[in-house]
Length: 131
Ligand SMILES: [Zn+2]
Image 1 (spheres, rainbow, N blue to C red):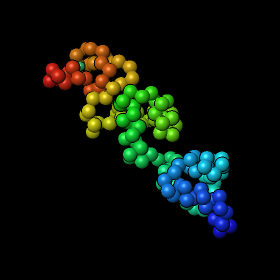
Image 2: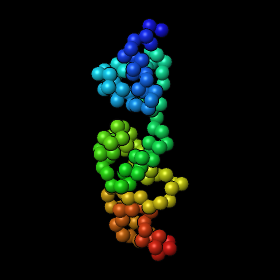
Image 3: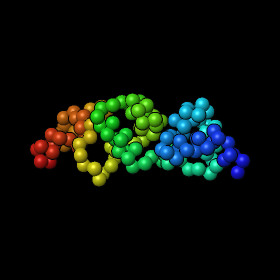
Image 4: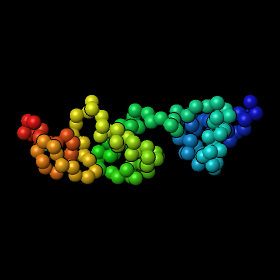
């Protein structure tokens, strides 16, 4: 294919295949990210890092950062994901029924069990009282 013979395209492909994000590869090759993305599409190369799906380690990293009290904006900047993506992960983490570890919530809520304002769910006061 003519596109694959272009040295710049080969460089973008090599970078992405070695684990760089498309943004990083584009920056290293002085290309616009959409140009790097189009070159990858034309060469039929799939990025190891999906634009649309988060990998399990990525989700875990976002959750860990949110739990360690970073703002969503900070987490988005550090992970290179969008604010909406981080917000979705944060909301999914609050809903996850399989994970019963206490999670910090951004604003205090009234506990239905003990009536205290709590910032961690499930409520640690109710847990300590055995309810
Ligand atoms: Zn409670």
